[in-house]
Image 1 (tube, one colour):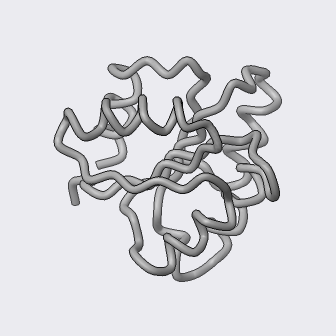
Image 2 (cartoon, rainbow, N blue to C red):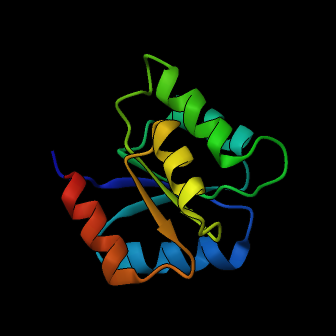
Length: 121
């Protein structure tokens, strides 16, 4: 099934705007959340087909939210791509262990992001 609905979870308005622009221009339907708690509420209300997850956010971090989504039977089938400024290999491995399908380091390259999304479809 082709991915259409994407949820962007990032506390940076600039990053949310940038990712939304890239995705909408490429035909995706996008919703956003400013933090993990808001993301969990939105996922329950209107399940996305993909989540782009920041790591460093107020409240629960992206690793914690990714783990919660991956462990919940209702949401565990939603793929997550972590999009973060944390560029250490240990962070990448930890993110994937929490249940993320992929890991991108900011600044996000639009072509790389679209390729990763296509690979999940």
